[in-house]
Image: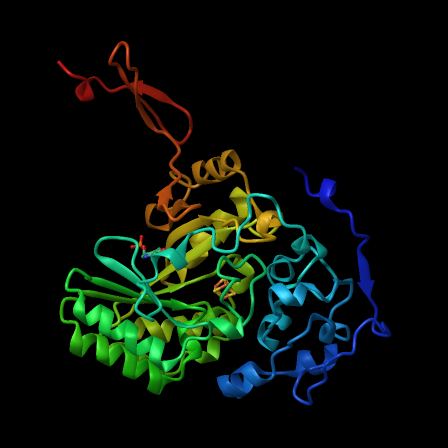
Amino acid sequence: MTLSALTDYPTVVLSPVSQGYAIATSSKILKTREELAAYNSEQESWNLQLARRYTHHSQLVGVLENLEEVPESLYNFFNFRLTPYIAQLMDPNDPDCPIRRQYLPTHHELVVQPYEVRDSLAEDANITGDGSSVVHRYPQRVLFLVHNTCGAYCRYCTRKRMVSNAEAAITSDTIEAGLLYIASHSEIEDVLLSGGDPLILNDRKLDYILGRIRADAPHVRFLRIGSRLPVQLPTRVTEELCVVLSRHNVQMVNLHINHPKEITNLLISRIAMLRRAGVMLGNQAVLLRGVNDSVTVQRELCMKLVEIGVRPYYVYSNDSAEGNWQFTVPLDEMNRIAHGLRGWISGPAVPTFVVDGTGGLGKMPVMPTYISQDRETGEVWATNYRGQQARQHNLETL
Ligand SMILES: *Cc1c(COP(=O)(O)O)cnc(C)c1O
Ligand code: SF4
């Protein structure tokens, strides 16, 4: 189904004088383009910046042109949060700006495809069932969801069902149950803190959780954190945070950068702090229509990432949570983009493209085929990145 076939709502553009909403006003939000432009995110603590977030898209009428008015009912599904720092990255005029596409709701979100479901990865079914928020899908590793909100809400989020949902709040009891689960399951060798966003927690709470895992679960060999907050609010990365991460030997932090435009000087300087703390850095991007679904953008993103010391790790296909279809890139297109990277850019800059299977199958790589064997003749042929072919006699059965 094409995008236009489902465009049954007229697109209404909000104007600064729109009376469509009772705009929630906060003295802290930056209401005009001038105020926003003058704002220096480096000079305010990250907690204060969180308090300055936009909580309704209509609060951006004085900041962005061509802002779409969407039905209020959309907020029943998924809230809106945007940091002033991300608002500064948005093109004030162009509704197709890749940053705007990631964060601004459109009426398409209200259209739900028959195959789209709340929990497409069946994570809830893999939660351990003892009051914890540990997702135990794989034999030796777990996701530990430690917070249910994020710095800003991405419209394509796979965990919409819990992110920003007050009923899904993760309490200290939930965390204690998770810590007990991890401590009492000696097969767990790898713990990945996730959410929501774990770095919304303050340093003291993170220090506590990481410290408990290290003290009570010596079987955990690999401890990592997945967070988008450094991308949405780079000043969250402080020297104090780096001390906490190195104290507990957090070996890896996976970021979530989708477009080269997100790699600002401020982010680069905070990534350098994480590297000095001895943390291995990876990136998990999502392949999103109208954001990064081209070979050119992916090559530039991946090379920029290695340039700043971040290893492109995964590029996910967009999961089928409700209303996410507008971002979906079909498999053949995903394959074509993956094929455009190997051989063309540095080997370590090439990420693995993965599909996180609907129904909780787990992550499966999408691999262009380079080596193939003819079942009948047994001949092995190799095709390189340029399409040149040669038979590989040494790989055939004698
Ligand atoms: C992604 C994921 C992991 C981690 O997978 P890696 O391939 O090791 O990065 C672990 N558990 C769940 C449920 C996941 O979705
Ligand atoms: S940061 Fe991740 S969990 Fe949070 S809204 Fe974005 S995609 Fe969802």
